[in-house]
Image (cartoon, rainbow, N blue to C red):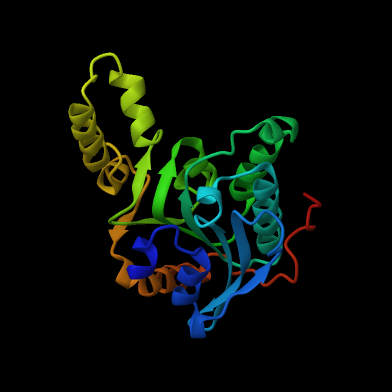
Length: 238
């Protein structure tokens, strides 16, 4: 709990707390650092991990980060390796560089990789999950078998400040009143309870049961694909 609640915590520490012997084999560590990909074992089962890195620019999904995650998800599906997705992102990158990077195509590839994969997929929202950025990070809408959220997670169509400004900016002019409205939005509209009522979250958990619940979820999904294949499909050059 202390790891996740820390300001700009490192997602690598969370992955270490979930995995066997705190081991994480990271791939592409020097590329698109706001997204982590790699392998862990969970009670002896090999699993791929895709995770936002909130310690790097709020875990924003850049074009390169989307490509990195898409290729990894496709690779895991190719060899029937289950995927754990850990979500904590402020959203998409907004910059001149992003506009030049064929951003839309990169995000579409990530969504497509999740939607097309048939391996076992478990997603956990640890912190912020706003709008379409949440959707393409392995949400139930695009194929997650099990979706969990910490009780402290924030899931919403847009960041709280933006949502309040969009809906009531002309009516909330006092800073104190604005703060109260934002707090209410956080506790009601952006709560994991609201997401669970909408069917986007299967269960709300505490941080101290994260490893136990993730491991149990993958054990339950262990028989999802019973055909013994060396390789399901070609590893697409995304």
